View 1 (cartoon, rainbow, N blue to C red):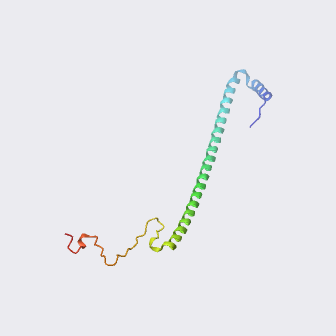
View 2 (spheres, rainbow, N blue to C red):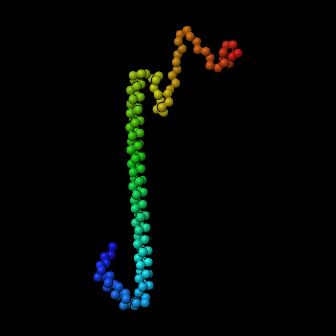
View 3 (cartoon, one colour):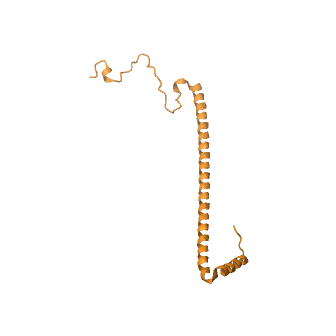
Length: 130
């Protein structure tokens, strides 16, 4: 900012006293003080707004980085899950493989020889469900 030493301030006050006179000098000083206060408040407001914008940009950047890290971790987890599933499929067999959505696949069970499974719906029973 502008550097005003004590000597410069005294010289400025003396010039203002000579130019304005003792009657108008207090009013001019109040006006100059109010103007300086408005400029300082405006500058502080602009500075605070810039700082808020910078903080907001920093938060957005951190959020993007966190989302990227989460996406990378999810991709790594999916790849590991696929490897484990493939390794499990080779050792156990295709009837026990779970789909990628996490749901279990239905496994068709063959009835044992000589045993007949009862029908699920009572209407399908040989005696009419009664």
